[in-house]
Image 1 (cartoon, rainbow, N blue to C red):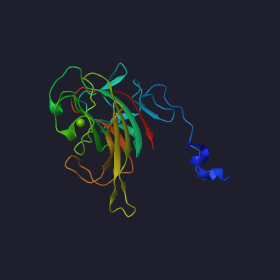
Image 2 (cartoon, rainbow, N blue to C red):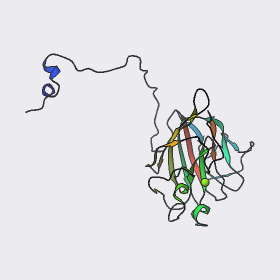
Image 3 (cartoon, rainbow, N blue to C red):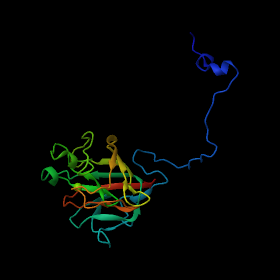
Image 4 (tube, protein in one colour):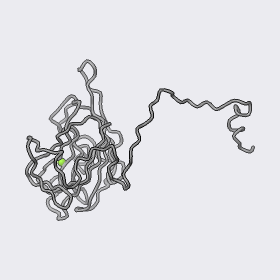
Length: 236
Ligand code: MG
């Protein structure tokens, strides 16, 4: 039989119309301008670090940060964790990082840093290129919880990307329980965390429990000179 609109949709042959379920109450999505290149911030992103300006950041203890800024990147330098001044709930985050070109240490001691959503839930930064460690502690792991689906690591010294969709755990209305959140993470464009639950329950790797409405983005100083650049975030 020849496939035509009328054979595929007999209702049309009877003079009927296709039902299209448009919701008249749905709102028109806001118009934004996407970046020209992959990784460029869209027009509605909050640019947290553009290579020059530290104004959105402070030391984890408050006060100015002491990480170095050179050639458009910030470098961990054993002066402690840093955090954003602004706090966030659910977000899309883009962040670029590079572990030291010069290979030093092994396992957790090589190119270790970390991206903590709400200052609590760490996506591990590590040189995991030919560097074995426990799976839920390697690059791209939801640290202490879930290993990445694959190891998409580039070589030491090369720039890498994380694109993270973070849904925060939330307290139930009566405040007695936690509705799990989730991590979805792309490492260098490859899906490595696929909607992994964040329980908000205390684990051996986390000194917290419960849920927070908002928290800062924290970058970890684990003593290794890891670099960061091009950091932007979109509250969801
Ligand atoms: Mg770490």
